[in-house]
Image 1 (cartoon, one colour):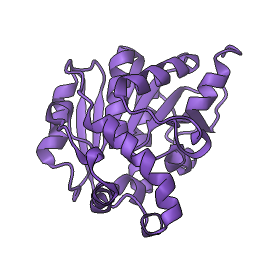
Image 2: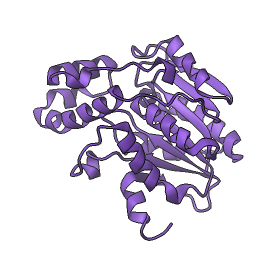
Image 3: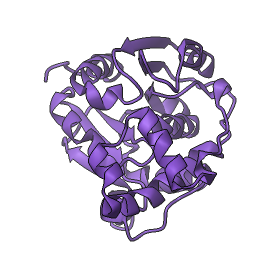
Length: 254
């Protein structure tokens, strides 16, 4: 990694488990309103030869002083430039909700350099639906979040926390609701991870990911709603770790 690229990489990615001479890297892309810390606990459960990186979008946590990104192309440009130093090893991408769309578009850029794509809590690209929730008032935005169950009551009810959270949430909603997917299928295996009671993704939405790849497709269901990945991390990481062991040719020891 060059000295000029290191600060950019470190701004955009959090490495929760550095692995010297790793066999491969898993890059995770968080949901709307989310941050890199959502995947912090995954480090202890992945195969020992796999390094875990998580994107930290601008405008939150340690990047709170930076302006939010409201456009998918702008977000992708920042991520693609920042990830150049980690392209020396096989990569897998995993995105949750909004992050699934980000991961899919990154996989479009990487092509066969991406060994595996995991998508969670999002319809396949052909089922992408535009939205207008980001144009709602604060109450409308929070009502949508309550429906999905992704934010604790403490955040929703605390005026100070709401003031910090709402601008990030609105910017992310604008990004994903105005996004238009790339339509060409990927040359990358895709595994879709879905919650059985997710109000945002039905079975047809989930199976639509099969058309997004010319490679292998697998759909796995988990008990839970839109944020089953947060509620049942051990179950999800087990499935991801098993697939990575095959994709990277590493031990599935944890």
